Each structure stands twice: as structure tokens, then as C-alpha cells.
Image (cartoon, rainbow, N blue to C red; front, side):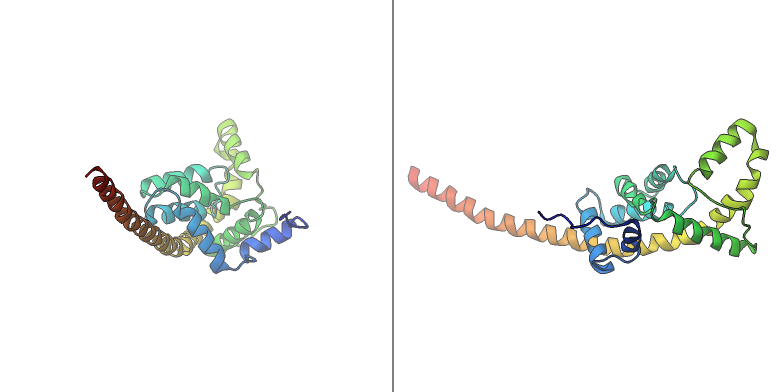
Length: 207
């Protein structure tokens, strides 16, 4: 009854990721409230998600889950939140992410991109398999031409993405936790007088 009349296309999903239809403020608030329901401090939850999101802007496709969790563990952040954060990197956003970090890496290294330097979803798998089966020489060109520039370009992007997600989410989660604490305190304050009244009535009846 309440379903959409038509399913969003891939282009619409990509556009909605970079420019949410409900607006950045509301989408960030929604995300913050979802994270705030997880057990943990505002720092651990926000930092965990930020690490997961930031690691998605690296060329280590297939290892984002593991690396995000490892960073979260090292910095005492929430590992579950980091796993959620890795959803920032997905089939719709990876092409934009790869293009960004590759071109930035080429620029930082002072190189000019080559037409043969194409990064696909299977590049990391191909790199790892050939490395173990055929040795370094078989993959040195892939690393030097593609992965290394992407790795260099991902470093500043990682830092920027982490900051972009961490500070707004931490503020929202703190606000949510404060409101929840106030609500619990108010509910408890209302319950205590009722319990005292019920107890007093029981004593009067016994008397």
C-alpha cells in the first residue's frame, strides 16, 4: 500500500547517495539516530562508522570490512559501526571513488594517466592471485601504474572523509543519548511517586 509506484533506477540511487532527496541534514540525522541505538559511546560509534566509510575510499576492495574493523579496534571504536560504514563503498559509488583517488594520486605523484591503467572490481583479486602464483614481477606493472597512485590518492581522501562523517555523527549521537537519558529520567521520576503512593495505600489497608 505504501510502496513506491516505481523502483529507483541506478542513476537515481547514485544521485541520491551524493545528493539525498531528503537533504543532507535530514539524512545525516537519520543515520546518526540509527547509529545511536547501538551500544557504545558517541566517540566509538561515530569513529567506527567514519573508519568504515573512509576505508571505502581506498583501493583495497574485498578487504574494506576487515581493515575497517581493524582500525576501529586499534582506535577503540565500535566495530559494528565500522561494518555499517563500509556500505558507503558499493557498486554505485565505487566508480566515482576509484576515479577520484586515481586521478588525485596521479596528480600528487606528478604523473600523467595512461589509457591502459584501468581499475576494475577484479583488479585486487587478480593482483593477489598473480602475486602468490607467479611472483612480484607479474603484478609490478598493476601496482605501479594503478594501485600505487590510487593508494597515494586515497590517503588525503581517507582523512577528509573520516572528518566529514565523524564530527557531525558524534554531535548527533551525543544529542540522541542526552535526550534518551532525559526521557528515562523523566519516566523514572513519574514512576517513583506512583510506587510510593501504591505502597502507602497497601500499608493503610493493612492498618
